[in-house]
Image 1: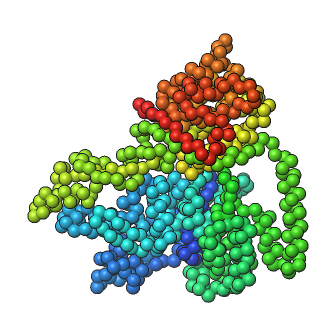
Image 2: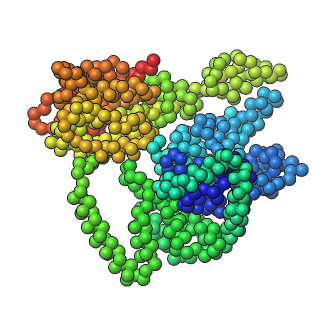
Length: 631
């Protein structure tokens, strides 16, 4: 046992989390589990503790590919020797660092072997090491897109294919993917969400007795990990035995057609598009039955599987959080188990109740976000020295991304191994030796993320003319684009006597949406202060920014007594323009008589100016240009 690992059986509560991890141990083909929750909720602790209760596997000592006994990988020198013998060993637990390079993940040319003998030998990466084991990613939502794509391919195919530096290698890579994430740092791409077989939401206990017990156990473990682990040895062994029994029983577990129909019914009712949900629910229900020592799946197993399989797969509106309506799930389960007549009657009653609830909810909506149509993607053409992973702006000489060419460079930051070795070989094939003159640099082309700073006018004039619904709808549409482009967002609102940074820069567009929906309206228009706060916020960021101002421009509160609010607004707009901040002004002024202040403000910002109607026009292509000065 790894004595530095907190015992799995000692984790307080978190029943659903522990169940999901145990199911992945019973049936590794489930596709792993995503653990979402706030920091400090035992996400990483539970994931790391799982390996200590997993049954041992047979593997050859020193095998870099974790070959299965009797089925060695064809290029594995260790397992293909005559004297190779397998021994019982713990399941591999491989951590994928957020800063890992693509070469480290998928493998690359063994430079040492190539320099010694000029041979092309494959050096396996983390995917090979995780074969038949667990690949763990902490803060998986922060993983760069190019690594996400690699994981998607490997998880879908069960193999890792490497085509680079003159190598053509394919090796098995079947692993259980366990990821943890904090929603405050942003969500996952839907494609990666669907790859996780199960998902669990974890929260810290609200009961003071449970919280004190968590602290008590953790302090005792840190004081003497060896002694603490010994105290839980019996419980750990019982869990390991339970898992071994469940794994052996799993092939015999039966799920009848009626329950299979129930699985498909639940997927349809919760509007789940992916057929992977039906398959994983089938497997999870059987694994639950095996874990309970039963050879027949029961309805409660299907319900338990639904709670883990459907929340992150059901069709959602933008910014709607994953989750299941437990009342709806109870009703669907009850209807499925009732005779047809009663089920239909219950469905009619539920439909009437839903209609009544819908009517009451409509009556309570105030300043909801109106639909803004299909807002097109905003392209930002910027020049920046710093690189942040994203999709919006082009980034040349990026540290990550597609290799577009190689160039000679005696001090390369990203060595082009193949080109370097070829240069040395061409220069002297008999006396092979690499010199500085042979070194080549990889030139990559990637994408930058942007910081989208929304500055929203929430003054009384907006409320009087009932424009906040349209404004909120426009921002929500732009937030959807920001989420898809993996941008960071920040929100400033201004009303009354001052402006406020409602949301500091974050990748969680869900928090931006929540702040926007709860945004109060009323009071005067402190536009100068809003532009001042925007300037301060943008000066603190390393990311290429985009300023989006939604206002009618009718400033009437100055920063300093006696000053003209409008002239102050123009002055701050000029300062933003001098710094080359790309900007977009959305003119919210309506009516026949318009002052045109928003358009004048856009001119001072050197920005595009659109009305809300123009923003949602399908035939408009918008490119915001600017030069970011990084000093």
